[in-house]
Every structure is written in C-alpha cells, then in structure tokens.
Image (tube, rainbow over all chains, first blue to last red; front, side, top):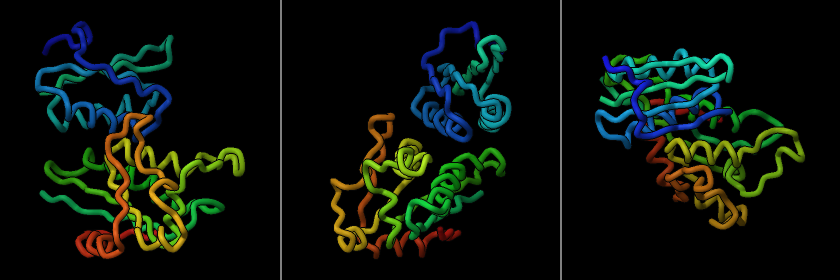
Length: 83
Length: 137
C-alpha cells in the first residue's frame, strides 16, 4: 500500500470543532464527489471519529486509510484514498 | 441487503423540552449507522415538520440569548448540510402565518446544498406511508 500521508492530497476537509457524527458524514459526502484514486485529507479533533467511525467506514468501503495522531496539536490527520 | 426508510415526524415546539432537538440529532446520527450494518444495508432518513413543529424552522432564533442553548435553526441547517431531506407542512405554515421568508430554507453559509421543501400535508402522508419506521417527536 502506498504511503498516503506522504502524498499530496487532492482535497482537504477541515472539521476541527465538529463532533461525531459530523466528521464522518462530511467525509462521506466529500468522498462521494471525488474520483477513484484521489486522496482526501481530513483534519479532526473528534476522537471517536478519528479512531473509530471514519476508519470503520473506510474499511467497509475498502478505502485505504492512514490515521496520524498529532499529539502536540491535539488533532488527527486522516488520509483516505478513494478506490 | 435493504434500505430502510426512517421518517422523523416532529410536531412539538422547539424549546423548553428536548423533543424536537432529539429528532434532528437522531436523524443526523442515523446517517452513520451503515458502518454497523451488513454490506448493502443502509437507512434513508427524512424529517417532516408538522403542526406546531413547523415553528422549529423559524429563522433568526435567539436560543443562545434566551435559553442558553444552541438553536433548532442551527440543527436544521446542519441537517441540510448533511443532505438530509427536511419537509415543512405548507398548510401548517399558512395556519401560523409563516411564509418561505420566515423559515430556514437553506444552509448555504455553511456549505449546504440541499434546500428545505415546503410541501402539502398529503406529501408528508405519502412519506409516512412509505416509511419502514415512523418516529414521532
């Protein structure tokens, strides 16, 4: 699998301050409009979305995903490749 | 493999109770349940405001100033942002002297693409008849 976080994302979705379920639903909505192969970077500070719902959704869809927790900043960067 | 239609019917006033707020938050949250369902299964939520419930859609609510809580107006905009269909009963709007100018019709300022649908009660009845689950708030 390619190193997604080293790739330049095609789109970025900033959902900082939004709590579950918004990050997941907005991520789904964004991915629907993207082309296969493109990479979406999601920035979120919602733990349940970053560590559970978004990875679970991607796994179900078969989308490669990398979740990077930025401890010093208090948020996560999530890289998703639409396949 | 099936899509279950959920109709959230709201006929309660917006404040001093959590009822209509719960309708919006449950409808919004229902859009994420697919991650817990079998492949191909999903739900399709719709919210219908009827009776006094149409007052949840009124613009320029001062909920934070008056009650210290987030407004139902914002919840409705969030629903539209997340592509959730929101229907408002035309007859009840007329009864309460409301026009399209008085209610939340879109969520453009937060990036929403869907707009509120003002429909005759007959259409809301059809939504209820075709729903797999009716939830009254």
